[in-house]
Image (cartoon, rainbow, N blue to C red; front, top):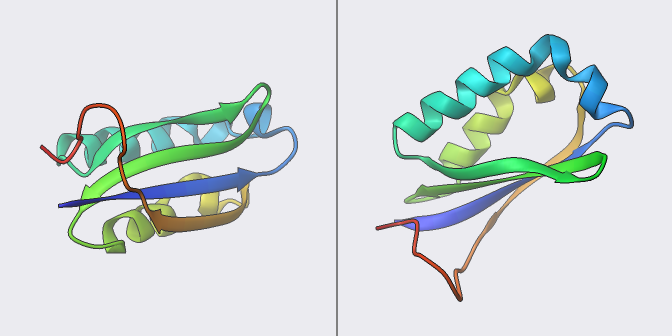
Length: 96
């Protein structure tokens, strides 16, 4: 297993604009976590101007599929998203 970082750049006012979609987004997060795919996730910045989600999988397709199905992406709250391999240097290995 490898790790992949899914990074979101979000629209201005994201914290308020996300509310109608938050429950559906959190369900997607919980489901991915329950399957062992999503290791850690959260908003970045104060106020939030992005998000970082770390996935473990054989390839980037799991993280990419998550983004394509995320209500935040579908409803235009995410301006840009990208998936990159994430190489752990220090800390607990989430792939174990």
